[in-house]
Image (cartoon, rainbow, N blue to C red; front, side):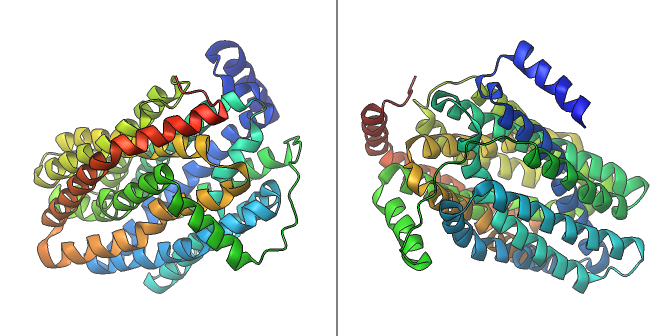
Length: 428
């Protein structure tokens, strides 16, 4: 592992010339999380496939997704408060250990043949709890790993590339393993991949920022974070649009097993490639974003993305060609990730440091925290209307959200320019 890190470090420092990689801690984080998140996305492909294979019910598939992500929604605000009060490095290490334990239990159940719908549902809930603690802390932790403030935007973009590349390789490899050796090996890879993340965190040398011992209760601290978001126009608008995407724009992911098996007449490998095709677009979008230095104009890109997602969902819903569906999901994945990455970059660039953890927890709630409702709504609509028609309904809502955001765009742009000018933030 140490030799791999040395080769990785040398390559990025002397060939890629990406400013965020000047920070040793960020290089360690990038490498460790790439392995860990690949295993996580592999599990997110394997569990729905097993559930659908056991039940053959779109509604139960949506219900499982709802219950699996519900703990994420509940714990995200708490994680934000903890992130502003405790060492993010320490909390993130504990969360990785908890994730490894849950994934190891899932591995053991599958290899022993004891996995059923109830056990998969329970472990999905536990993994959702781990994710609820992990996401906002990981997002906020990025700012501690870069040594120069001007490198933050690049670090956020590279963090999105790492996430997207994991979404690319994880589902693709997961689909191959599902089709060849079975789901147990997907979960085994996920369990072992946590070791890379734990090693990277343990190897970091951090100048720990001073954390004030607030006398304000956790509830009042959480309320302060929500009030800050409510009264800060750019953050409020960006997060509300993300919530629309979180409920409707990514609803297709919960229905991919239905499209792979029943509509496109494929199997487990087809599901893996459909999941990976969206990640291909995600990687392309993040590579583009990593070349940007400032945040000027990103708010316009954020508003355009839901409309592109809507067009893509309509096209995917009527497609009966596997290859065409793959191409469509590349564009959907690119637009979705571009909206998320641009939103992350703008929000983290203009938010106050003292409220970063709480704001990022609300940010995560607006996207991943909405996935319980996305899965439940998508599964219910598919049950009563059919999967293609369900995606058309979601596409219409995405268009409406893009239109609403566009009407507020001039005020939002002026507010961002005022903040960047007052704080001397790079806005090229």
